[in-house]
Image (cartoon, rainbow, N blue to C red; front, side, top):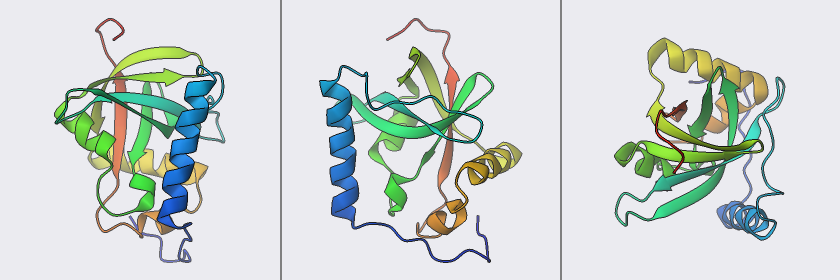
Length: 158
């Protein structure tokens, strides 16, 4: 996806991004989840905690990601802080699609998949409404950014 009228996006140095991620997870952990998540609203993406199963270790791995609601589904992007390469959580989710998400209103069990075709275009357009620099950031990556749909699972909570 590209937007020819966009200027080049600026990103802080990678060490800063990774430090911020670590501090965000630490804040979530030390407050028992009271700080670090926020509900998605019509004009703002929310923050959730996604827990996947490690593709090599089989151990639980958690990250905090931006999201928005699409009906009963939750939508996020496998952007890796806009760096090249796929984020580990997305590789884990592809190997083990069953996961859990913590939202400001509680935990849900979900099954993850990549959006395709028209569905991906529609969801990308929705992200573009929430982040007007989306196409400029996506242009920093060497591969297409996966739009990830987390669908409610029929299984009991993990």
